[in-house]
Length: 153
Image (cartoon, rainbow, N blue to C red; front, side, top):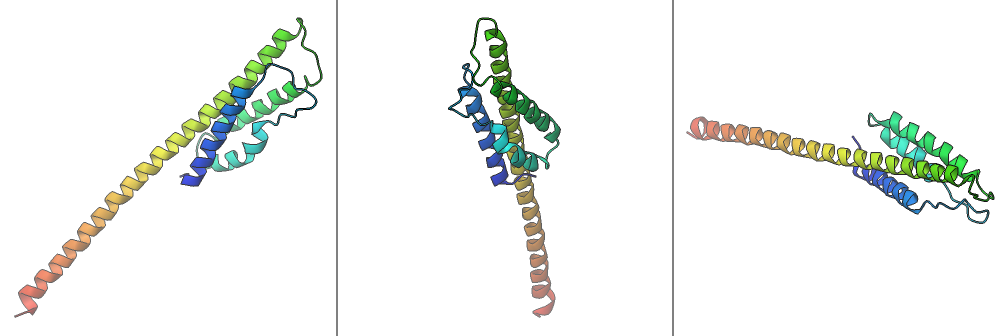
């Protein structure tokens, strides 16, 4: 089960990946502006957190695809976009944005499921505590009854 802080980290990573996708430009990367892939910042942390879930393989594949697409995107650094290669570059950017959105959505889904599971366990724990307290009160009542009936005379 993921802890509250771990869920927040996953949600933050999902938000950052979505923001990265929203800001992804259809201009080729310029030599002066280095665009870091969000996967480099979050990949290890997220994969470690997701070891507690059953969806780690899909996320790992998405991160690998993101790394490959980002490397291909970076290979356009310093190249000019012409009519001949504009469509190819646009498809690359669309693919890059798509994988970022997919990864963000997957992480959001994982976080939401973890929150639901956490709430379910808390409610289950509360009912367990209520049962223990009811049993304890029953035992105390029984002891009181025994004391007042047999020992106080």
